[in-house]
Each structure stands twice: as C-alpha cells, then as structure tokens.
Length: 174
Image 1: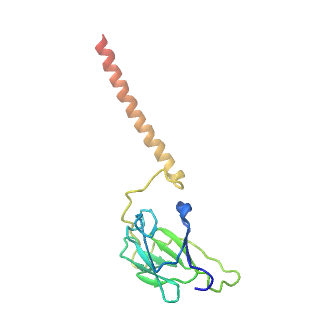
Image 2: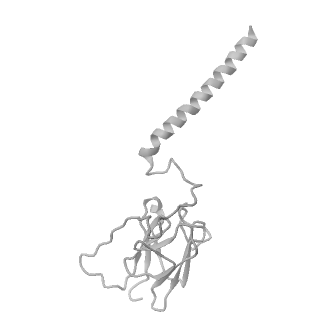
Image 3: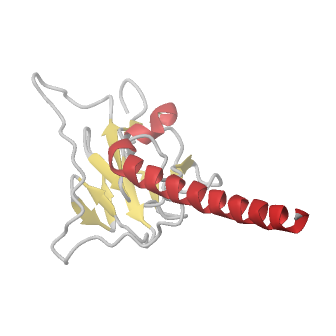
C-alpha cells in the first residue's frame, strides 16, 4: 500500500459510533458477536459472517463463511472476491464502503448506496429476527401507532383487573 492502510467505513446509520475500521492485519473476521475482529451487532449479520484476508499487494479480499443473509460487493452476491477502492461491501443488511488510499481518485467520483435485497436466484431471506426492537431509532412512524395501541390495551386490561379486585374487596367489607 502506498500512503496508508485501507479502511472500512460503515455507512448504516444505526452504527454511528463504530464507523471506521483501519485495516492493517493479515485477516479480520466479521460477525455479530464481540469475539469477531469487527463486530456488527445486527440481526441480519451472521455470528461468523465473513473474513477479510490481505492479498500480496496489500489490498483485501472478502470470503463469505456460509452466512445466512449473504455477502455482496456492489450488489452482487459473492463467496470470495477481492475489494477495489470505493467498493460497496454489504454484510447482511449493513453497507460498508471499502476505501483504499493508494488508488487514483479522479475528479467527480461518487459512490451511491442502496441495499438491494433481490438477487437472480430469487431473493434474500432474512432468517433471524429475534432481536428486532420496535423502539429502535428510525422506526418511529410505522411503530408509534402500534406501540400506542399495545400500551393502551395493556393498561386497559390492568385497569380492569384492579377494578375487579377492588370490587371484590368492597363486597367482602359489606
């Protein structure tokens, strides 16, 4: 590598605190649990999702480890592929930009992002949704009505139970 190490820049909003990972080691494991070199605690990311392996020229290649929701580079589902400057790596539903300092950056270059969950084989199936949080930032509009309805129902049932209990207590007193 010429002037510096390549970087992974996580673009997905929910991971604002851990956006940039500078790459200098020979290998990185990416997955949902903290034991991975790069931990992305998202339900669309497998426990042991993929690996980044350093090539002889200092760049990296991605190796999918049989992940549930797949690994993509620039929208194409891959099992193993080398990364080039400004490639968009998608791990499950998380978008990550690969930035290599030694590339000729040219004028007017731009990167577009957009998660495409469809592929030619028929579509991506998300298999784990156990940690879905309806109170998570970004789900305010769609879930606020549901949350209000659920909370209203819970408090209504609790109110009825309290009224029944008080009614029985009053009847025993007379």
